[in-house]
Length: 171
Image (tube, rainbow, N blue to C red):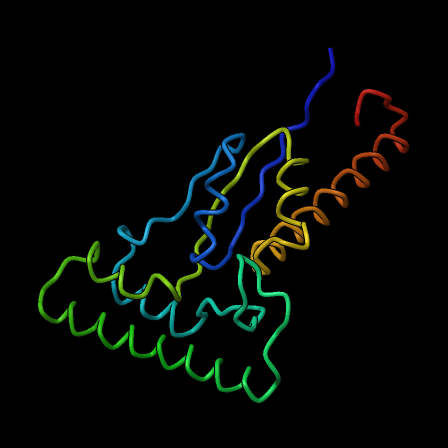
């Protein structure tokens, strides 16, 4: 019988695309919970490394924004996004100072959080086909593209090792 190689990725991506990753049931996955991270740590993470869109799409009908807004509008949009992020951090501090638990306070900063997830599977072909597609949200397309490139490099490495060792069982 054919052996399936198991591959594990440690991913870091904007939390706002996390639901898209979770729809793929063939993955075994575990993600960091914003409920388990102390408020001060979460605010620091959001301030130092906020999740930011990689494509500033112009409004249009449908689920995809094919065309980006012009550069001056991108600059304005990026400023508005960063201002919203700073405001979320300030409101999180207010709620924390009122004595609220991190499971509530950290929700305020979720649109700006980066999440770490471990994903393990033996089959990624469907994931890459769906998420590297031109119609995929740009952030998840970027994540899937990086994973596809990494997996191709791993396969090449194993094939090289197989050739060096003369072991036809590795593939």
